[in-house]
Amino acid sequence: MAKSTESLISILDLEPLELNIYRGQNHDIGSGRIFGGQVLAQALVAARRTIDEVDRTAHSLHAYFILEGDLDDPVVYFVDRLRDGRSFTTRRVTAIQHGRAIFTLSASFHRAEEGLAHQTGMPDVPPPEELRSEVDLLRERADLIPDHLRAILTQARPLQFRPVEPFTFLDRAPRPPHRCIWIRSPGALPNNPVYHQGALAYASDYGLLSTALQPHGRTVRDTDVMAASLDHSLWFHRPFRADEWLLYSLDSPVAHGARGFAAGTFFTRDGQIVASAAQEGLLRTGIRRSRKRPPATPNIP
Image (cartoon, rainbow, N blue to C red; front, side):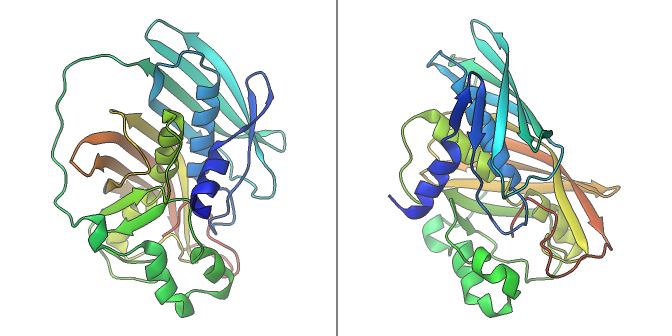
């Protein structure tokens, strides 16, 4: 198993502390605080751990990021069992650090049913085999990355990212607020659906706020930009595997009042929509921050 895949599984394998209480470990992506997608994924896993029915998978989750997470300490997740129905199960999760809530999540799980089906089409983009990974693109320009970020931005990641329109935080040209990224786990994940939904939840926080900054020629790594996730919603539509390539198509239709909104859709290679995500984030500009201090954001380029 690839080391990066082991890292992803270790993020999702929570430690049970007591009934309805779990502890998760952190992975540093270079933001100086816990990546929002990590807390999102771990909270989802914690909620699923409290459900006995094997036929329930998450169909939606809605989360608020309250405080930035401290990388030096694990996160403890408290799960409230709100409802156990015949078809739906509802859970609420609170993530705690240093005695304070840093994150809350509400998640709903659904027993599989047959019903009406339709969807829109998939973007026409090159396959992942024709594209290069984001890490390789950064490693080629490593000499341009600030010293305090170089090692961590060029390290192996829990997920593989192959952008259709390659650019990094080193680029400054304004671009339309749209991007597409192929994503998958580097190695095979266990067959349990919670690992695949957890991996997609982790991935769903990548690139949303970056997309909202593209029309302005700004990035989340700019020293005068403060970008942070405020809330996040995710819907699962179909079964899928996160160790097979998924296309994440991202759009940001609006930014105003120091907040930016972005939404994304996950497609399988054969064009099936498996999940949708939406997020609003804080986007402040003109602030003063030391170049030695990482930007206050859970996102990477």
